[in-house]
Image (cartoon, rainbow, N blue to C red; front, side):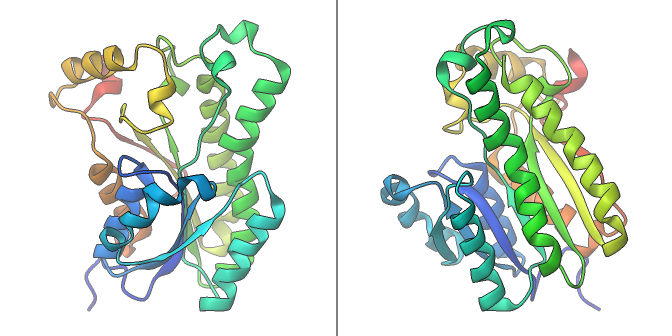
Length: 257
């Protein structure tokens, strides 16, 4: 009998690798350690100097550029998975973006174009990936996205990303309902503040880190490794009876507001 957390012979896609602090890296490492193979994407050629040296830690996955706003590149990513394996078992969406002028301002003052761009990159791209993944998940599978509890409560300086992440969480639940009959499970992992490239764009981010760590019942912040381990659970047979889950990996930070 195989171990319930084993991902041996499982194959999939992890998106959003940017550097050694990326949640995508923690996910890819953890998935690899449990036996999974994967394609790992980064946004553009400018990221290559930072992502190529990370290949060893992830078990030397195939690394591909993928701008999620470019349907041609998204098609090429899923075509490559089909060509290599004929199926996929998981997709990890770890991508978020908002223009700084909109992110640093009030939500009420956000521009139409800035709001549309943040929603497209951070939320609708998950739907575009799910649509392409569905026909490849012939034996069921798992779709995962990353969020933060600024979607549920007002967090200073989280601003525009609050409504965007709320939309992402709602989309996750609808996908879980729609794709469940095909054996496709869908989850959102709500990590506490982690010093990723995207999070570091927030104003007063160091202050947010300090407050979250002090407030957390466990007295610690989550790491990219913690998030990766959660993704393994949700993707593995151990999580087979779960879908539509919003799983907090934040040391209990969210209960203290």
